[in-house]
Length: 443
Ligand code: HAM
View 1 (cartoon, rainbow, N blue to C red):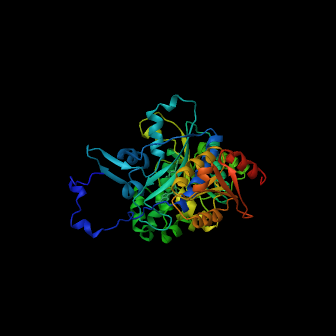
View 2 (view 1 turned 90 degrees about the vertical axis):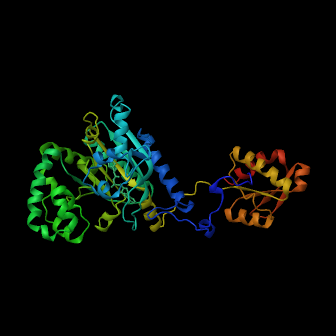
View 3 (view 1 turned 120 degrees about the horizontal axis):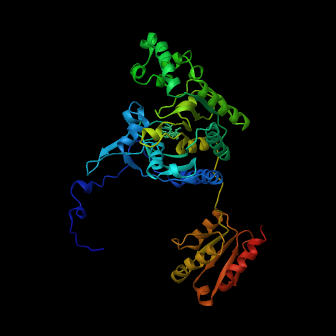
């Protein structure tokens, strides 16, 4: 690197000499190996299930046109009203960092002409979402979701399958969850229900929280879903969506519940469940850890049917259903239940080295072992043998290979049995077959 400082950025200004350190922004966090090992485990479970059900992975951009979410999620939702990270970019375009992925997947379905693919199109995703919420336990500004979207079928079996797969993933992680479920009907039955609901709440308007007073005119269904105690108390006796479903919607919902019953999925009927995004119709559900209301505020996941979304975004009328799960919330629950991801990499052999020449050669030795299928570990940054052997012990390896100056000259390596402490000199050329034979005796 040149020592000549040519640009201003290379010259520390007076201000910078205070060496101010930086921290993550509010509501954002680094995911360190202690957590990322859970992420990898969850990813593997989701991928496994997705692949066996013929669900393909889709990656959509983190940045989308703001209007996609305004139109898709709904102007009057909390996400669009208060929580989007939106800005005008240098080219004057209004863009938003995605707060969720369903609208993006629907956009991709239209953009790539997936209507001409065999239907339904089954997709899954995994990625970062950003919502400018008030950070609190289980509520971050940057978080991760995985999700499934099945587009192109209105069959109730699709809803049941989505819920079933979500349940199976939770089970594969050792989590027993319950699935509150409801049907919010179609546009026609909802129009009638909306009127009945407003009639119920109107005389009680003064007892509602300030947000719900506004919701009553703009989006009365969300009053049912309010987390405030006084609003929840009123929702207990509110008219229920299921009593106002048209025949088609009622039959659809009965079938979903029937399939889930057959599949032994622990669903609970939750008449006040409406969800916070406008694109839903018919089936809606969440994933909770228990039946307690407290679970509701930190639902592990949620989803439902969104038969109108594709058309709303400019595509042909196309029914669809999906769900998403919050990874950080799942990790938090796994930790609190003492569930550890299974160890996927248990090294069997440690490569230790002494001296510059040995250090140089040991990386090649490490590669030779690794590519031959032996699980190896090292700490080539350490020079002392004692520290390296301590680490080998801690990792629980069966053997340590010690490469020193003398061994390099002789074309040998020392093999130490970590259990007995016995050491022997072996030919460096025969190290792989020798180790494989010794390791085989353990299996
Ligand atoms: P959602 O209920 O907004 O639905 O989010 C799904 C899950 O993402 C939540 O249950 C929660 O676990 C997690 N989550 C949401 N916000 C946060 C946050 N601020 N911090 C941490 N985790 C959070 C959707 O996003 C829909 N797109 C689901 C869907 C897919 N519906 C149909 N297809």
